Length: 409
Image 1 (cartoon, helix red, strand yellow):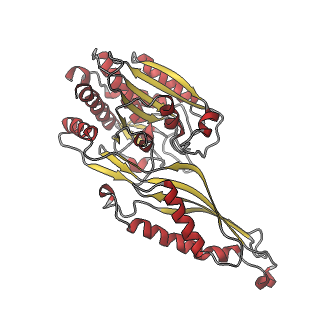
Image 2: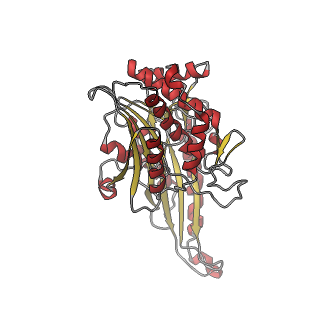
Image 3: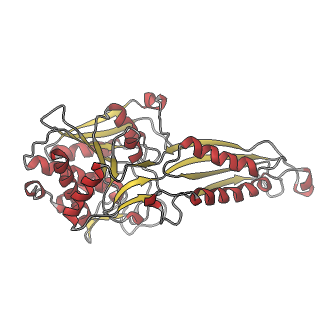
């Protein structure tokens, strides 16, 4: 154990996270950073390959998780620390290489600087989640440098398209899902996430009848028709969150939000608006199917709509994040908690989160999976995103402990 841990170098992890941050990789354009991951892996003496997935075939595959960002290719990287026994259980590490845009608010530093300063690596994607990905890569490099011979393979999937639905992990698992367990070093405040909610994107269309404003009563305002629907959506959110919750989400004030984020209506201030569209995100409780979640929202909208126009149309588009969970008594959860306790001095709590992530794609295939990674989740997708180097080093060391414990269980 000590032999591998001594090869974890915080400054080297920070350097390589900075390298990855300096390669912009907004969802839909991940090829260049995938190549950078391959280059870093090669420098650590690891087997790595750039992988181009068949995008058309994936879009036709059962279970296709949807997508939102425009793309004409799907490119990731696979890094392997080979085991000595082809029949031994294999372990997956997974991290996404795509990031959200920097936005229009001013940053203190260039969003793509990858600067190492003040004990942190700065820039878009440093926390979410190039930092955790590079920490996992260095954990594998430390095991190789120490000459550890594992029974089974350890495979790091550096995947695109997590932010808009998880198509990258879906593709990686379509290619190879022969894993006994998986760990994703998303930012979790050094806690172990064993359950997460889901999320669905929807668009609704409300139709009315146009008329001149001076003859308003001759028309039917789509805005007026929408108002009771908006109230019904608030009530539907309340009912979703009033149902019995997963124990790991019991203390969350609002684990499953329902948000209407966009409204479009009207053409002119003196014309009754004949159409309104509303777009939003529906939180999906742990344990609920996507089909039931869709049906529940559609029923709520239909019950609130009046009969002064055609029925309201609901279309489900974009990323379709199912919930996911790994049983708290699963041996993999115990192993990760024990490994983290050995590093941190106390067992980290087992928690649940309300957001969707790629964990559920492993769970859907019967592969126990947890999230564990550095602190700072409030900076994910935010201005001045950064990640503490100490947290990255701790994450890498915990992963080393997990791999060694997995190899001897």
